[in-house]
Image (cartoon, rainbow, N blue to C red; front, top):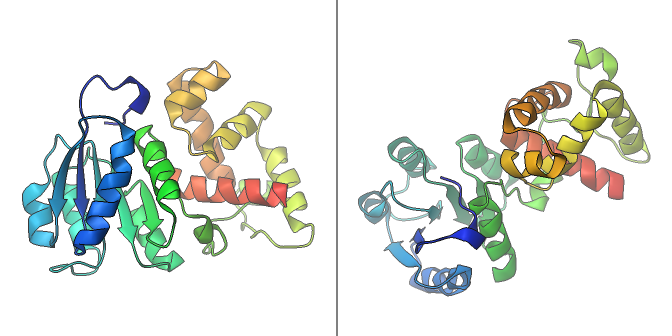
Length: 243
């Protein structure tokens, strides 16, 4: 259900769930810049969220801390009931562990409320285009298992090593390049920008099926389990290269 905002031939339907009316109205006003005629569904509690969510939603932005919430159970319920609806968490929490937990549940973005409206709009555009938005602050707290590189030994089944400082990132990149093909490195670079498979394939002149094959190799090399973890690791690599 990923959408190319630039080619929409119909009005979008977006759900905003937050227990603060002012937050809802501010988010609604900013998202109106996506295009004309957007239909907004508003929810101030988990009960209203579950009642208002439907399969024809183009996007759902959901707060974690709202009346009726039990941790992230309401996120799980929305994902269970409407698996095709892209979900973004919009939250006052800035704990990387909470961000990671949400992303592992299948949400396609986590936007801290402390971020600017422009960042929020850019993140929403990315998700609507089929990408995944990972907050930069999450990259500074990569947990064990999400690594920014891997040695040839670890790629063959040994232990991964984490990214370090003072030149360690350069060594990490060298190790990664030694286990990936040039094409896979290109796929990784586009992945780090949050691009969906279709756009990666279009950029490189290859099919989506070929992109998926390259991604499988990248997941193994980065020692990650899914696309979300790969995006985090890939973005960490990009930051390390630019540092």
